[in-house]
Amino acid sequence: MGTLTLRLGGILAAAKHPASAHGVFRRFPRCGGAPIGLLFALSLAGCDEKAQSQAAVPPSPPVTVAQPVKRTVTDWDEFTGRFEAIEEVQVRARVGGFVNSVEFKDGAIVHAGDLLYIIDPRPFEAVASQAQGQLDDARAKAELAKRELDRGLNLVQTSAVSVQVVDQRRQALQAAYAAETQAEGALKAAQLNVEFTHVLAPITGRVSRHLVTPGNLVQGADSGATLLTSIVSLDPIYIYFDVDEVTYQRNSKLWFEGKRPSSRDTSNPVQVTLTGETKPSHEGKMDFLDNRLDISTATLRSRAIVPNKDLSILPGQFGRVRIIGSSPYEALLIPDAAIATDQSRKIVFVVKADNTVEARPVVLGPLDEGLRVIREGLKAEDHVIVDGLQRARVGAKVTPKMAQTPAGDKATAGAKP
Image (cartoon, rainbow, N blue to C red; front, side, top):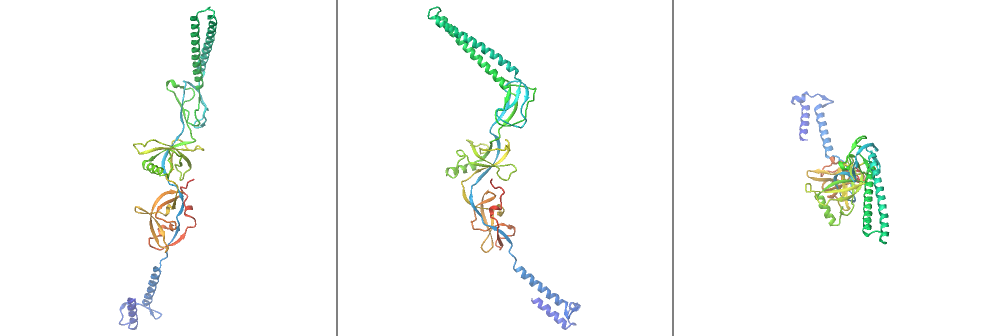
């Protein structure tokens, strides 16, 4: 203000003594009896005072806050697994011969006992007829031997025949019975071969394509059985996954402490997320844990069984498997978007009672129904900034606005079914 006073004084002096004033003032024209320079200086002074008054009281930026959600949660461990069929059969020819027909549609669902292939049965029917004749002959001979033995037993009582003759007839009867048994076995084998010419589905499942077309010669089991097709069961289905050693040790400790049931003794629940999905779509249960860790990967092979009513899962698919990793406990949860990173720390911004912002380091837990579990660093009554993080500055004041919906309703991605 001193400079302004000096300038004003100089202007007034120049107005009184135009001849002695500096040339710059002599060049300014007058406007309504006042110098233009005086009016310009006064306007600049007014603008400076207005700008200073506006900058002195900046408005507090608005942010949205919410209190942590408190509920009972269970930790889950997640692994990558691959689906495999519970039953898988390679259908091969059991007898050799020419294929007459294929009785199934490639890729269709077949049931146990359905007809798949017909191999020309005529050679085997002829063998079966021959075996039947041999059996009839053996039975006739056995019947004759039995009658001769009975006659000899009657005659030996009157000494009409010797005991030696009776013994010979008894031996002949035993040989006839043995021949009859052999003939029965040959007939059964021939009849089985006739049955094997009709290749039936041994299990229910989805069949692959046919690998042999009608008119081709196939080999039987005696000389390298020809592969005809394959069948895999689909409902239910296995999913195999490998549990790392650290997780296995932690779960074993929880089991010893009575905080988590062992999957060896209990069918612990599992949740499966298929490729391309954002949340679990199938539920199952643990079915098997191996008896040793793989020495090359330090992992334990595990297996769960999953219902597949719609037959949408095929063997060979990948999936993400979630198994329980703790007993239920009370936890505080907030949206993942409210968490920031400060170098190696995870922090959240909390609005204190005087509306100033505080950065609070937190220890994170797993996601549960779209919200992040906070293990340490927050209290239930804290007001956490969930929207407007970019406008918040540590130590500065903000204008908080409570979220209209609970934090648990803001994020549903990844929610359990």
